[in-house]
Image 1 (tube, rainbow, N blue to C red):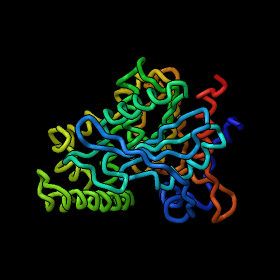
Image 2 (tube, rainbow, N blue to C red):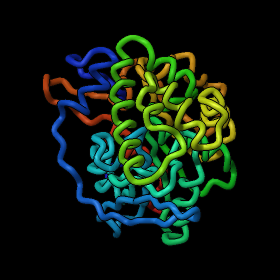
Image 3 (cartoon, helix red, strand yellow):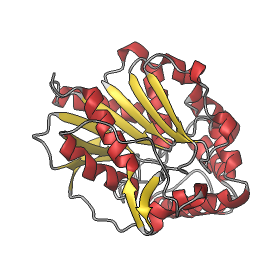
Length: 326
């Protein structure tokens, strides 16, 4: 095990700009899936969520992984990380948000960017089942917002030893605005298509309080959140949802060692929404790279061959800060 960190991120010269950085790891790079074991958890409200475990139970450290909007353990960025954790002595467990594991959840409600209750439930379960294993967490995009908000809410009582957050939508309203502009509308269109598929599976399974046509006709993520996400989860409207669910106001309350990896050219967020250094408490480090896109960070000197800078960097940071010697 070599927990020393790699060099600072240098983008592949043949993948310039935020969009190639964002798209290349998803569309081009071949994927070799890591074998995972599924565990279903019954939730107190009668719903369920699924955990996917890497088969590394003898590893001393445990890392909980939170995916992004409409992601899963099959997401390319998670599969890349899974291949990096085991050599660091870390077992991975992926938490699927409700309805993201390939089967609609039972209740009308689903998941959203400010819902920290399910994360708290899962972490409590892991601590009770594995009380002697150091626990860390890493979240991507929406999952990063959930993770940082929960860490701020729990402050000194947070049970993690350390955490990593990647490509964080610190202000959800600013993220919604960014996705309505320029080339970023392509990402919005892709996310809306995935959300509509998920909603269609749910409508086929149960009665819903919102007409499906209303959801299908939403022209933007903001409109989708206004007519679907917000009312289903107790918010007045999209503006209320974004304000109450964004992680940025909670950052000063975090009391665990935390690494935030974010690119200044992230096409999912306006730069002004990224917190300044004086907003962050001691122990929270923001690595703001000039480029890297959204959960991209594709490095490499040979055209067509990328290096997994993000996976290597975050896995080594987690191993170093979990301090597996203890």
